[in-house]
Length: 114
Length: 111
Image (tube, rainbow over all chains, first blue to last red; front, side):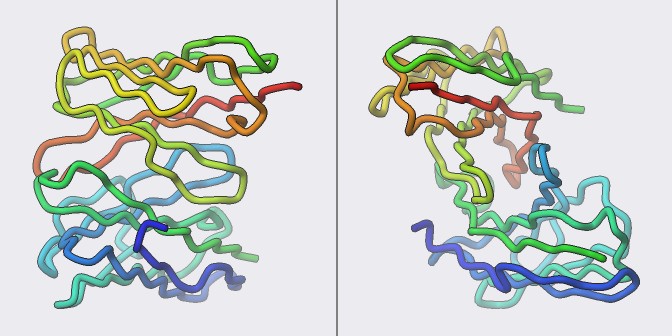
């Protein structure tokens, strides 16, 4: 139990639709990062949020966007879904600047795009 | 750009045997994380190595870090079936502590 919760756990969307995934960080953790993990691959960094501002972004198009709220929870939004967006989306919770030693991952949201 | 390479990518071993997984990374990092992932599940934190020469052990797993060589190892002692999983190493550190993952090592322990 990492204290990081994600919802929904599984969902199926149609190509072209939009999806919102949610993450509640571990208590006291002010930084949330999102990762995409395609089947058989390692997780890929999408972006990170710190104090409600985007703090770094990986190689993902603008249709991937996010938010962080004052309570440090976060959302990942993906517009105009493509088949290749099918993946496990992971939320990671940590303290800024690596002050905390461990980065905790939530259970993930499985997205299938058909 | 930081790159992470693990060797081997796939490891099939007998119960009771020892083996080492190697993790090389391309740029300086002040810490190294090891995670375990079971099929269909999320990442479970195993070790956080914070300094050169750091060694940590938990059960049959022992991890070490050589920051000068940009190398970490995960040693498995007397493997048991329950250790079957995919193992990822990932350097972190710096502001934001964003993680870069390689392909991981798939470990299968045969009884």
